[in-house]
Image (tube, rainbow, N blue to C red; front, side, top):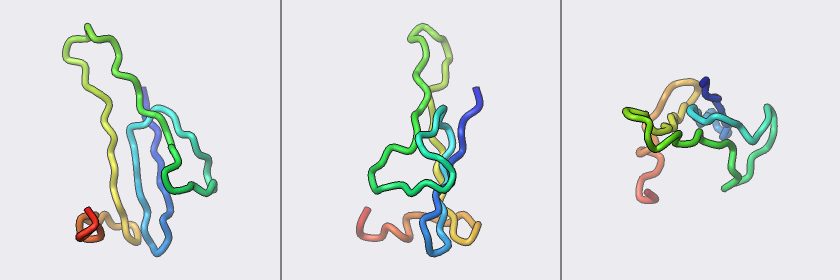
Amino acid sequence: MASAVLILDCGGGYDFVMSGMEKLNVRVGQMVANGQPVGQMPGLGHSGDAGATPPQLYVELRQDGTPVDPAKLIGDHG
């Protein structure tokens, strides 16, 4: 199953990239509020699935298209 990719424009040249969701709850150009759910992760499948990989969410912060370490921005707030 293919996963959806979401790129949120945070302003100031920053974009937040997420992948791994099976469904997006937002559309292109839609404003997103703080805390608003933007998508849904896939289910875990059947408990009897041997070797099944649990859902994984990929996140990346970019500044002007270049990946950056978010820890530098979080500082003492994390």
